[in-house]
Structures are given as structure tokens and as C-alpha cells.
Length: 125
Image (cartoon, rainbow, N blue to C red; front, side, top):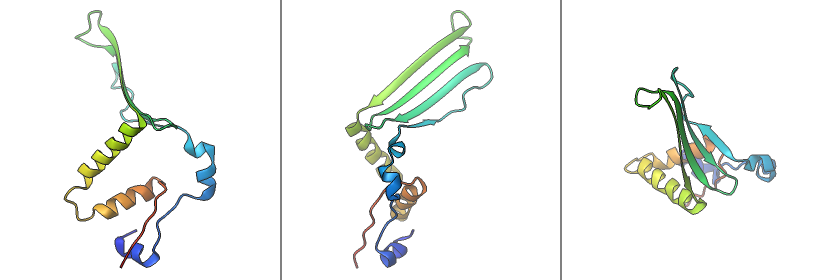
């Protein structure tokens, strides 16, 4: 939806009421951000958002490695953010993405619509 379309309709897309009230719609989100293996090594990078709003990023790598003392290693590390910090991170990332963009409004609106994010759109003329 463009700014002009928003002005003509005066409203934004909303998730259906059934989806908003469905507990499954509030299930934790998890995305695997890397392919799991490059052949000799297992690699995984996973981003997760809990129902409570905590955000975590976990990296796990194991397998054959010339640097490993026994020819193989296993390393896992995780970074977690409380809901308030995750919200601030979302703000910072969006600000970086939208800075100096004339189409910033349209880009954010498109993201909301593409991912089914409940939003409210208002327009004044």
C-alpha cells in the first residue's frame, strides 16, 4: 500500500481477529539463518523470538577443523536480549534501514504487510 492508497482508504491492514486471538499465532518464532552444513562442518545460526518477547541468536559449529587439537571441535554461543532491549534493537535496525530513504514509509508498510504484522495506518490531509 502506498501513501496515496493509505490516504484513500484511511486504514491499514490488520491481522484477522481469529489470528489475533489464536494462541498458535503467538507461538515462538524461530528462523535458521545459515544452511546447516558445508560438508565437513556442521554450522547453524538460529534467531528465536519467545512468546514473552525475548530475542536470542545462537551459533553452533562443529566438525573437522585444522585448528582443532583433535581434528574436530564443537562450539556453541548464544546472545540473548530481554524484550525491552529487543524492542530498542528493532528501532535501531529500522532507523538504520530507513535513514535517508524517500520510500521509507512504503518500505516499512510493505514489511508489515508481507509478514502479517498487525499495524494501524492513519492519514491526515
